[in-house]
Every structure is written in structure tokens, then in C-alpha cells.
Length: 463
Image 1 (cartoon, helix red, strand yellow):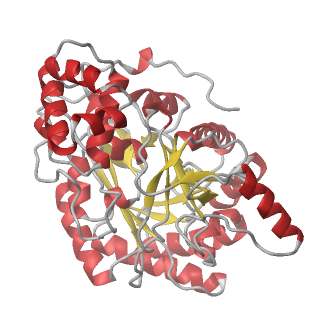
Image 2 (tube, helix red, strand yellow):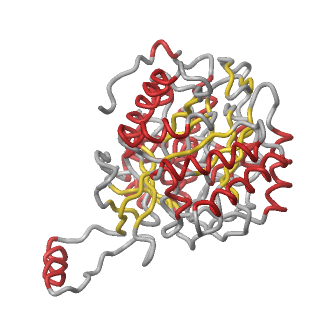
Image 3 (cartoon, one colour):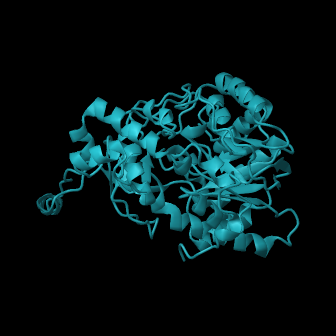
């Protein structure tokens, strides 16, 4: 937490760039009150500090926060995605933590110091990102999903915040939500985002060399490097399985400790590889092909939300061939750039009666009406799947060859979220949105001064 002097300095510098009047409006206070902050004559609460951080990030003033004891977000959502770019603050040294809390464990036979991971995402786009988070408390590093072929990213915008998000109760029929470029949430507790990148990948020659560079910064015996892969062909299940296996072999040769198959991507419509997890028998064929190609290197699979009956079928058909399950990926939902007014809803209804599609204000645009939701909005469903996977694992643990690790992912924004998920019984926990918002999240979770796990008892989050 920044000191009073650091906050005072941040306010003054922000106001010098955008004016006291504009800054006061953006953080929901008066200009006089803001000036009281700047002189130290008024106390401020943590949620008010978030509003200052929000204003700095929203305007792209990433240089201001570190100068005043606060870390900026690691990714600039206002800029087009660049697979070769480093994270914001890559050249800055992380805080000097004398000792990080350790909780040695093994993940698929690999020794790590602490069960905290970074999932395959834009936060792991290249070796610089892997190094960035490897130095900030994350011991399970997953290189962003790669392919056997070059694939460009969807056009910008790719990652935005949701306005007034709601908890997703039924992933099969999620509510339409509002997300648009430029919006930053005022409530830190319910931060939710939506992304539409399309699983881009540079060519195999490039990413294999970069994985080798990542291998050099991941400390063997203390951390583990996972490389996520997906098929690029659109064809029969046999062709898809063959391409998954080819990508897996490439990742192994480049230095992956573990290879992760991305069976779930909500942002590749028309591509069956992005929905493999929903067809357990097809998933099994891919798992078998990949296991064979990896020849001893552990195989993890990343899946989306599945209700109990379908999740049980997936586990029963695939557990024999996989060494770990990562769950859950983002949840697909329809996103609009602005909420329709009552009059617009009536007009849409009337036009629909005539068989005409009304204006939907879609984000990010035609053909990309749906995108993947992450953060608080999916936390309950991710918690639900984690609990179910742990129960299913106990049921089949007596069967030969059916032991697998569980990595819990989805809605992990705070240290409390981390310990809640770990208490369910998963082997490790991963965070993406939380790690984006606060690149020091791992250091905070592992700091000796932070509350220990026993002080974060599990509580009911979802059914």
C-alpha cells in the first residue's frame, strides 16, 4: 500500500496532466475534496486509492504509478495486441522481498516452491512475460497457446472491462453484458473482463526459439514451464488430433516440462478445436494422440465450464491419458457495446416480428458478437467446477493410471480468492485477470507478512 506522501504526489502529478476538475470527476469527488487529499488533510480509504489507480491506467499514465509506490497493470488494453511486446514495467525490478513463503509441492512430477500459476493467456505471450511473472511469485508458468501455423490476432479491441457485471449462474445461457473500450470499473471487488484475441500465434520457428529462452528463466526444481498448444487445422477429428500431437511434439522439443492442450477457446467460432472439451469422445482421441507423441512428457488439458454429468463423462474418458486438468477457461457470452434503451428494446421486438434483425450494438463487431468472460463474473462457476473435479478425482483415484493434477482457474483476483480455491483441494491455483490488475499479486500471496492460509477458511461461493 502506498504511503500518504506517495498518494499526495500521485494526485498532484495526475492533476497536472488532466486538471483537478477532471480528476475529481473521474474519481467521484469534489475538486475541493481532492485538493484536501493532495495536502494530506483528508484521510482516504483503499477503495479510493483504487480510483486513483484506475484513472492512471485509464489514461495510459503507466509511468506515474511506480514512481509513487504503486504498480500499474501489466498489459495496455488500449493498444493493439503485439505477440512480441514485453509487459508494462518489464525493465523495473520487483520489490525486494527478503523471503517468499514456500509450500513445496510436485506438479506432474516436477518440484515447485509454491502452488501459484500463470495460465496460458496474453500475460504469457512470450519469454519476457514468463520472466516477468516468474520473478513475481508465480512458480507455474504457462506459455501462451501456440500453433503449428502462423495465426494473426483478431483486430483491436481485444480485452475490455465489463460495465456492471453480473454473476453468471447458467453458462449455457449467460446474460448479455456490456463491455466497451475505454471503460474502467469503479468497483475493484467485482472486476470482470471480456476478451477476444482469437488464439494468435507466431510461426513455429519463432515460438520454439522463444520457448527456449523462457526455459532459461524458469528455475528447474523451483518452478515449472508449461507450453499450451492447439490445433490449427479444421477437418476431421483425426486430422485435428494429428495437428494437436504435432504441436505438442514441437513444444516438448523446445523445452516444455509439461504440454497443455487448449481444449477450450470461446473466441474461435467455427473452429472445432476450440470446443473439444464439449465432446468427451473426441477429446479422448486427441488426448490419446498427444500422449503418444509426448512419449513421457506430462500432458495437461484446459477445459471450459461443464455441468456435473458432462464433466464426469469427460473425466472418465480422458483421465487415463492426461496428467492434469486446468479449469476453467473463460465463459462465452454475448457482449454489447452499450445497453439498449427501453425504446430500442421495443423497436428491436417490432422489427423481429417482421423477420428483421434489429441493431445489437455488438462488441467487438460483426462476427464477434460473443467473447470470453473472466474475473469476478465467473468465479462461482469456476469454484463449482474445482469442487466437482476434486470429488471426481477421489472417486476414480483407486483406478490404475487415473491420477491427475487439478489446477483451479477463474475469478482469482485476490489472496483470499487464492486460498479459497486452494482449500477446495486443487493442487494449484492460477490467476490471469488478478495478475493483470496487480502484477504483485503473487508476491502479496507469498509475503510472510500476509495472512496465512489457516486465516482464510473456505466459504460458500457457489453450489
